[in-house]
Image 1 (cartoon, rainbow, N blue to C red):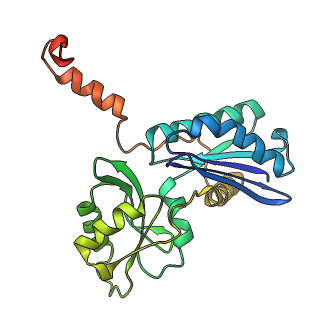
Image 2: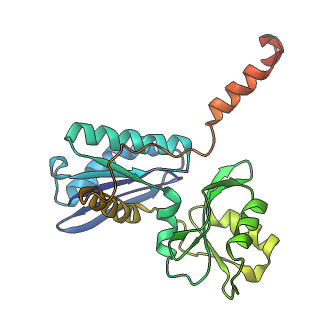
Amino acid sequence: MNILAIDTATSLFSAAVSSPAGVFQFETDTGPKHSEILLESLDYLVRVSGLEAKDLGLVACMQGPGSFTGVRIGFAAAKGMALALGIPFVAAPTLDCIAAPAAVWPGLVIPAIDAKQKRFFAAVYRQNKRLTDFMDADAGEIARAVLAAGQGRAEKNAALVTGPDSALLAPLLAGILGENRIVRDPASRRGNSRELLEFSRKKYILIEKGGVSFEEPAPVYLRKSDAEINYSAIKRDTRPLNKISGK
């Protein structure tokens, strides 16, 4: 099956296509500007893979957690293309895809996405099995989750911190748990559209075989957007509007 995978959940934009000619990937560090290059990049990627849009059989995007705007952009693109082409679209959890390349690590794996305000979207894994819920947490909360996940085991291996923002989280965890307990993945700042391709392929095979029912995917948001938070704060403020605005 020809699949297009769109990864816009973090500051790294990544997309990949699987075709009879192989897997083709495009990746760039765009910051918050995914929408400016998204459609042109997808069109280019499909063409270099030897396909046309009508040849695609499935579109996939990151489900979240991640950047609120980035997840929305990915869903809008995937759903729009799926509707236009008359094909299904699926989504895979962002942290699952980030953790997947580290499945061979013998200890715990912690994928990290900067959630701002000194917090991270994270989870704890061992050999691709998620041991915790998705977290919107500070370093202390994540450290406690790491300790809890290792209870009952003689942990001889350091926990591996991976993902686009591992450089921020790893030293914080090392400061809490000890330098010998934490290792940062040196190849962690990368997109994960290839992993998204594999997750979506497996998921669609399960759907086709009747192993799971098909439901249109919904984004995973662990917190409200900044706009919603600010609006709620204004609604709770009982001062006159001119006082809130500083006039």
